[in-house]
Image (tube, rainbow, N blue to C red; front, top):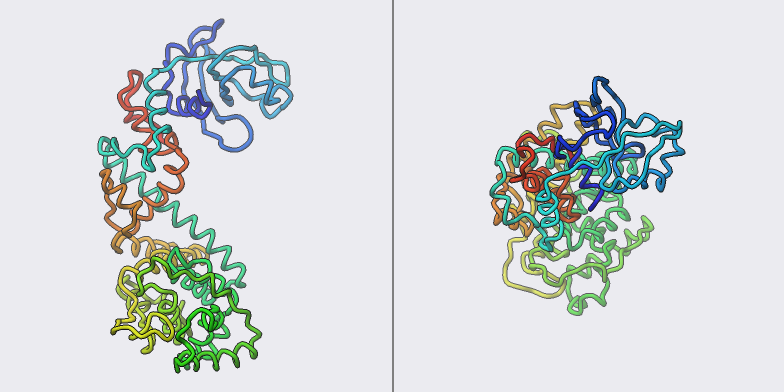
Length: 440
């Protein structure tokens, strides 16, 4: 038995009502189980019950064993003096408050199928424990839950971005540059791209934004990708030699410190996603970087945002994926899917943060609308949920699904998940699952 399971039973009033009684005063009527407290103090605040003819209002504490009251030191803590009900699985002791009052302690019964359903889910080794049962869940409830998760995900991202914004001295242009740079590397090269942006401030790039060759030299050089040891064919490559010459001058001028070139990953990447090509695309975006964030705010649709970030690598990369190694013609154009991922993960969250900090809710709503208008991401997580019956119809929904996997499924928080909670409660004999509180 787990204490969190007893919390869930009490929160959703799934104990057998007839077993909630005081040995002396008789039946206890539960008016409200109270507000679930995840912080320090009693487990539930503002519980309301009736014992006999007397109404009680106070807090509820839940333990596996009644003796845990003493093991946790609550008998010496006056913060627990307002506890009016002690719910336990094993009633093995009399519980007294710090003021000496004897607590009403009960060990109510419940349908054993609830525990069996819970164990079946949390012990399932699959990444999606309920994959065989999701299709049974009320679709309206699923949509409502995903909406909440999508909102939580963008709120989490906004907190991270707000911290980054603070570190840049509330420079919106610099913050956008750092965010965009990070996501230009997708997951594989996120770290070196983030390090590059931190070592090469946007203000330096701005000074050379009218010269694409110098912008590329700054990016490739600070990235550590102009090291001759990395590319054997570079000795006679004219463009590579030009970048090296430019970077030697710029490095000395701005005291730049390059990222270690070995950090960049090429293995198992499609050539179009090689960091060399992506860096050139980033250079194309930054070569006209003045007022980029202002232009983002002016975009009133995702199509306009796509046009802004659909950049093309410089001409050299039409025939190369690596320095000094020529290949058949390539487009060098950032693909629609990669542009959308950039908008979803970097641009829209920053717009949301701007609206939040500037207290302009209409901008926050515009950010949400943009996510809802974008096609869903396609990855293994979204594919798993789709196979189980939950299909993403927008980027907002796919972001919600990612949040569900990362924050709930991965940690087997089935009791806190609306879907998991509904499935655990379904089919039991005490109460219909449709009336669950379902508060995470």
